[in-house]
Image (cartoon, rainbow, N blue to C red; front, side, top):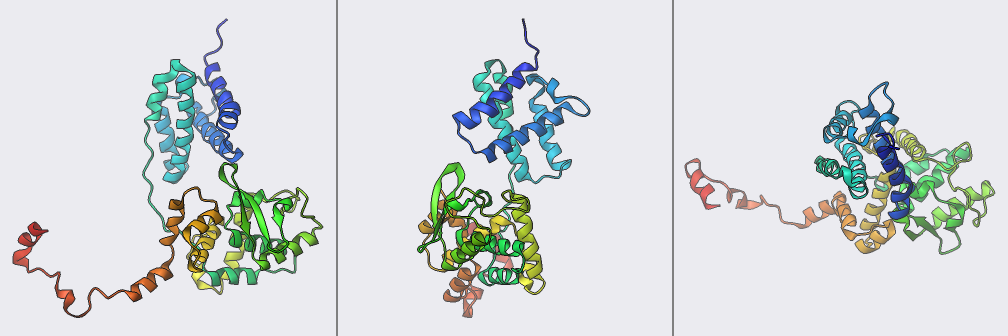
Amino acid sequence: MNQPRASSLASALRVFLTDYLPRQRALSLHTLHSYRDSLKLLLQFVAGKPADPGQLAMEHLTYEQVMAFLLHLETGRHNQASTRNVRLSAIRSFFRFVGTHYPEHLAQAQRILSAPLKRTASREIHHLELPEVQAILRDIDRSAADGRRDHALLAFMFNTGARVGEVVALQACDLMLDSPASVRLRGKGRKERSCPLWAETAQALRAYLGERKVALHEQRSVFPNHRGQPLTRFGVRLILKKHVQKTAQHVTSLQNKRLHPHSLRHSTAVHLLRSGVDLSTIANWLGHVSINTTNKYLTLDLEAKRQALEKSEPILSGDQQDTFRCPDHDLIKWLESL
């Protein structure tokens, strides 16, 4: 007996999300959720309202529908091109799987795989200078339990440069607070690394965990919310935003910065770079797979650029500024000589 036409799509989605991604490719739960959300948005768009996405068949997910969905993300949902590219990457991954496991849909999959990623503009990466970090930490009201948690949280993030996902997943058993203090972090691809802790950071964490009566051998969240559950990424973002806004009232350099939890990771890298730490050590500190990822922090260090400028000879010193002048009547000759 023939199955309904929609079964191939439902079956493909089930195998893709519950077997192929987690078991065969061993992707993280965060990546699974991102792929799931992208495919859910696509199905809802193609089905339309009030249609049921459960009635869709594989044939409904055409190249034209995918391109219309990507346009909708930018014009209807006002997503950035980078978000559009994330959604398209998930769709591509699904149809790469479809083309391999469902050969009857190979031509359809190949056409969708040809959908291009959109070029994105490179924005300046904002980070915090050391005096700004110190001012934010000083301004936190530690008379309340939330304030003591926030102080320990932001100090830890600046010390380690940990990704926000690593921070919210941190458990007490990952901390080693005896001298020399360190922490075990689980990064992308489930890779583990150890990161040293400054004595001040270790002291703040020891006092905070002691107040909560959390032992270092326990598998308990280091940074919980009001319900005792681990903080979410959104929660960490709100905490940083709240304290930055407070300090920005008297530290004007904070007022025009676009800051988010990853900004503290950038801040750690720049601070280490200015302290004379070599790039390979910074790469290991941050858990970068390639040192090429770490090289971007060389472009962030404006102070280093100023120092280099002071050491170099001005281009327009003395009579040199006349070197590049060209009389109007010789302009074409000069262009041809280049």
